[in-house]
Length: 91
Image 1 (tube, rainbow, N blue to C red):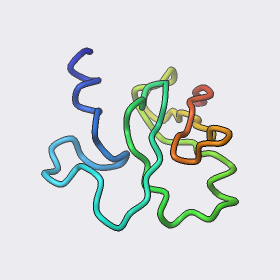
Image 2 (image 1 turned 45 degrees about the vertical axis):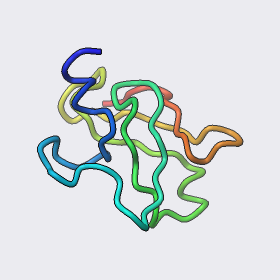
Image 3 (image 1 turned 90 degrees about the vertical axis):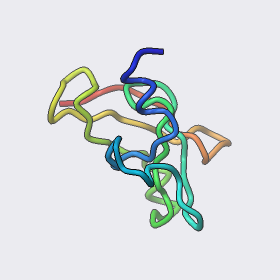
């Protein structure tokens, strides 16, 4: 595991890597991002409706194929709503 991967593990997507409270917070619901450039991060899905969760997400990241301004696409894993699988990157 390289340094970038190490910094991402156990973090919640959208929080700064140097935030002292970068891990999951009590009372919130998270889905794990699996594969792709955001592998291992947790996504806070607490305020998403079941329909929104079923649609998947496009998350901004400079770590993907398109660099700064690009997005990584994650879709819900059938039968396991606690995981979102990477399906590719988009500009």
